Image 1: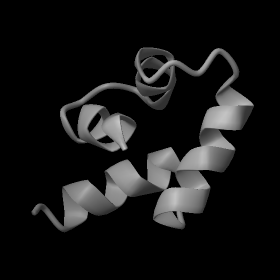
Image 2: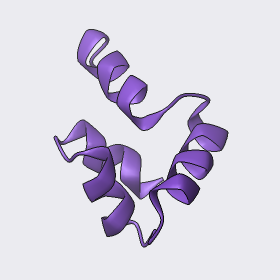
Image 3: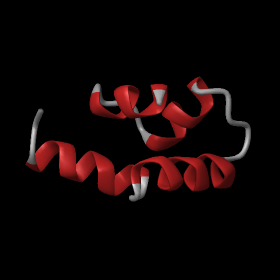
Length: 52
């Protein structure tokens, strides 16, 4: 998912949602959570704690 890369590069969750074509943050959140099993904000926190 394109949004995950944007979040890892420092974009906010809302910026990543918009750049990924979502007009509604709620739909983005649900899609992100379905794919990654976590919220976008939690994903960022995990990336900061466990860099790849």
